[in-house]
Image (tube, rainbow over all chains, first blue to last red; front, top):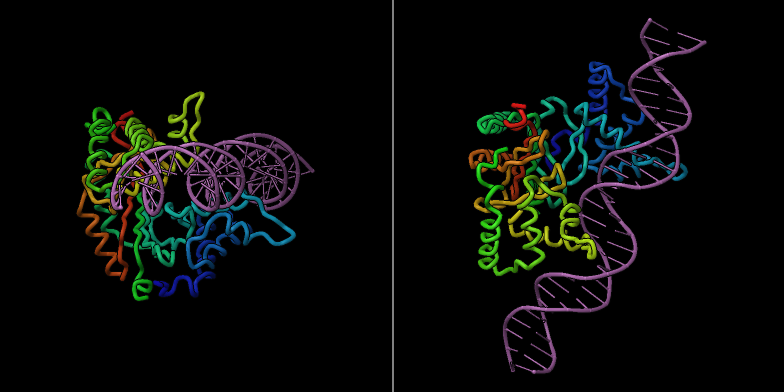
Length: 153
Length: 153
DNA sequence: ATATGAGTGTTATAATATAACATACCTCTT
DNA sequence: AAGAGGTATGTTATATTATAACACTCATAT
């Protein structure tokens, strides 16, 4: 799909960025959190909490839901992942943009998601909000449709 | 909050619009569907499926989840309601705009939601999508923050 | 070394949503 | 008016997503 670079090569890079972020923020990327983040990046698509849970668990050892939800909460709070609301699923974040603004192109055919980094629309949305007397703290845009690859098929 | 007119007076108007829509689309606004739509409009805020279910049910008569989910599905398909993804909740739709585009201001303090009707941002989002080779079919924007009323408190 | 807070383990349950199949009921045709 | 075919509803069960609550462990900072 649009994975010009992201998913193919950059899990390590993402982890390394996360580690730096955590040092800077004085929070801890513990083994569980790191593992969950790796699993999220390994997935080409948004991944669900219970799928992560299954992947975390081995035959003789089963993780419990709070384990993964706590890791997700931590990663989300620290802007290392995004939640795709329309899918109850989670995706890695490049972290080179502000946390309070995210936009996604979601292909309903292949289920892959591309994050848009684009400041103008945010600005417009913020201004429209302000006009209504509303003070925005977080903007989430989810655009569903068909990606170019799937359109060609 | 921003309910200049919407929630205070217009349940009947909303139902009447829905009836017209259904006649035009040759679909049926059955008693259950109508009741669910009324309950949604009666709520000043997005309302959850199980809250609707509770309101539909009386002491001696309990509706089951599929009843309300089917009604919600019908109303949503026919663009009579929106789903607020970040809240798993449903809100009435004015229906005087295209179904594939919705934007909401969501107050995290009082939980009220205002729908924005604004064509420019859509257009921009559509164009950005196209540039990526993406064909959008549906745009959902959820802006969280604080409404003017709550800001004053 | 020990108090403190952060992180994890564990059990249980809450909240949200759908599958599958049976029954009723519209409405169209004859 | 009877029956066929599709739409809607009733019902049971279960799947999926998420959190509460409490016990325990561990890091680290004085």
